[in-house]
Amino acid sequence: MEGSTVASQAVSPAAVAARAVGVCKTYGGGETEVAALRGVDLDITAGKFTAIMGPSGSGKSTLMHCLAGLDTVTEGDVFIGDTSITGMNDKQLTTLRRDRIGFIFQQFNLLPTLTAQENIELPLAIAGRKPEAEWFEQVIGKVGLRDRLHHRPSQMSGGQQQRVACARALVSKPEIVFADEPTGNLDSRAGADVLDFLRTSVDDLGQTIVMVTHDPVAATYADRVVFFADGRIVNELEKPTAETILDTLKEIDRPGSPVSAARS
Ligand SMILES: Nc1ncnc2c1ncn2[C@@H]1O[C@H](COP(=O)(O)OP(=O)(O)OP(=O)(O)O)[C@@H](O)[C@H]1O
Image (cartoon, rainbow, N blue to C red; front, side, top):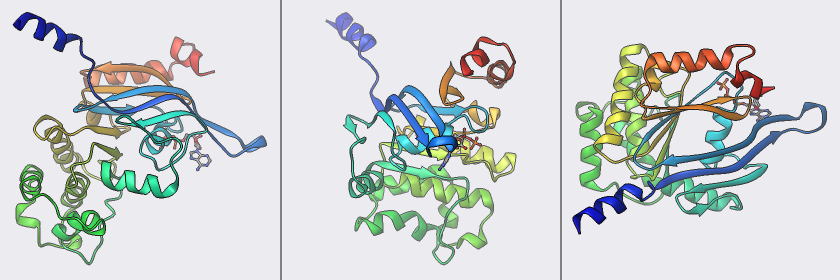
């Protein structure tokens, strides 16, 4: 019954690592109220690299913070895997973030007095755990840091520091990694090294990455780009190229386009 196996594989839905269902997020109240997200439905496929793009203030970081349990939603539901995190209290969210999610920020956020290896192991050490030796070796090998493990951040370039931060995010084998402008502070070459590593972590290590970026070149490393404008998803691309990304961004900015009409 080989044929039916193939057929059932073809129709089985891909696993969802994170999901937003009808998510609205409002900051403030009264005259200062800001609707940062206005009804966002999004599935993040497991084992894929998803980029989130859009103009400044369109809600990219707010969505990422809501998906990652760093902020709460005003309306709707957020899931990590099959777990609804919407009603979780602070303690539950802290445990969820520690055990199931990896974070990479624009600022590398390394502790200056610790070596690269100590920085990488710190989140696990705080949780009273040790890295799995084989996984640690794989991550260190892929990120190209083997000869830097005993250096402190001040002895490393910005690109190397960000790669330490990437290894720190991955060392706990998280279900999903959220990266907020991970190449925003790097020159293009160091940025490419970080993006190569993120791509490799998906292709070779089976990780799931969600990355917010303003950089169309960075977004070409993703399998899929989701575009935001004014708190809504207005477009998306599979297998993006720099050209299709730039065209889509231009369309979002074009006055009178269907997309910009949807924004008003
Ligand atoms: N803590 C907050 N309090 C009040 N308003 C906020 C807060 N965080 C975000 N906002 C507002 O929500 C909207 C969406 O912001 P968000 O940071 O998600 O956008 P973004 O697309 O990530 O922008 P950028 O690309 O500039 O980082 C903006 O109007 C912003 O001013």
